[in-house]
Each structure stands twice: as C-alpha cells, then as structure tokens.
Amino acid sequence: MPNILIRDVSQKTVDQLKARAKQHNRSLQGEVKHLVEETVKTTGDAALLHARKIRASFGRKTFSDSAVLLREDRNR
Image 1 (cartoon, rainbow, N blue to C red):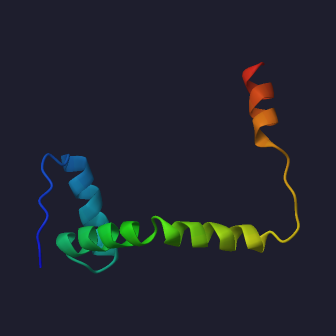
Image 2: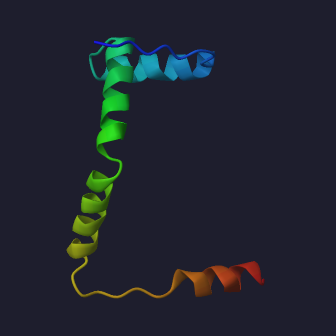
C-alpha cells in the first residue's frame, strides 16, 4: 500500500490530531488515515447525494432568498 508524507504540519495541528486520535482510540496515523478516507468519501457524488437527502428532509417548506438578507445587512 502506498504511503503519504505530509511536511511542515504545525505543532498545534499535530496536538489536535493526537487529541482526536485519543478520543477515538486510534493511533495518530490511524486518525489521519480515517480523516483522509472520510473526506474523500464525502466529495463528488457522495456529497451531492447527501445534499439531496438533506433537501428532501425539508419536504415542501420554502425559504427566503438569503441574498436579499445579506444585501440588506451589508447596506446598514
């Protein structure tokens, strides 16, 4: 199986990854591998399918155009 090397990761990021790994009972390498694999799964078609499921969960409810609200807020 191929390996990936990531250089110049900040110490803060490494510490956060170690904390996540500990929470999930994984090694640092296992946590990073899990995060990369999950991120790849949720791109493209999977993300589109997920968005459609969320949209369907709203049923027939309609929402106002947020662009109007943003414009009003910017004009204040």
